[in-house]
Amino acid sequence: MSTHNLYVALIHFPVMNRKQMPIGSALTTIDMHDIARASKTFGIKGFYVVTPFADQANLAEQVISHWTKGVGGELNPSRKQALELIQVAASFEDAIQEIEKKENQPVVTVATSAKALDGAITIATLKQKLASNASHVLVFGTAWGLADELVDTCDLKLEPITGPGDYNHLSVRSAASIYLDRITNG
Image 1: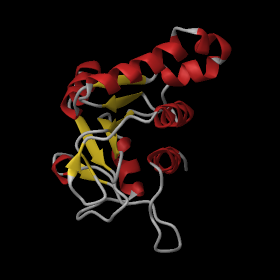
Image 2: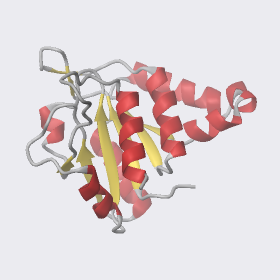
Image 3: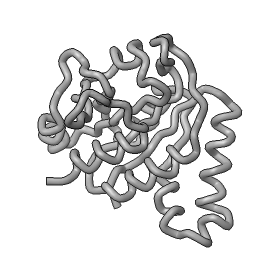
Image 4: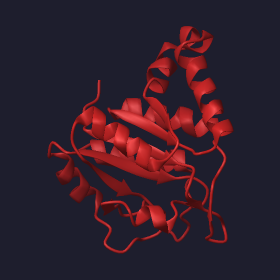
C-alpha cells in the first residue's frame, strides 16, 4: 500500500554521457531491483522504467515477468511485491500520460541531479508540496544524469544529495534510496 502520492521514473533517454552530450543508456537490472525495493519500502505508488529501445524494454519486461509471474516470485514473494510496482514506458511523456490517466489529474514532475540546478527546491519544500492532493513524479537519470532538455520540461528541480566533501557521484539506486528516505520520513 502506498503512503504517498509519489511516483518514480528512471530515465534511460535522454541522459548525458561523460562529455555532457545527450545519449541513450543501457538498462541495468540491478537498478530496477533496488529502486523497486526502495519504492516499496517507502510507500511509492509506482516506478516507471523509461527506455525507447525495444531490446531494453523487452529485457525489462522479462525481468519483471520472472519476478512477478515466474518462479522468481514464488521463491521470493517480497521481491515480487516490489517488482510489481514497475511499468515500462517508451518515453517520459508516455509515463506521465499513464500516471495522469491513473490519477485523473495532471502530475507535478520533479527533476533530480547530482549537480546544483538553478531554482532547485529543498527536500523540505517538496515534502510540503506532497501534502497536497497532486501526484508527483520524482525523475532520476542514468549514465551521467538527466539531459538538460528533459530537466527543462520538469515542473520542479530538487536539490542534490551531498556529503561532507566535494565528491558527488552516487549510483542512481543509492540516490533514489536516499531521496525516498528523506522525502517520506520525519
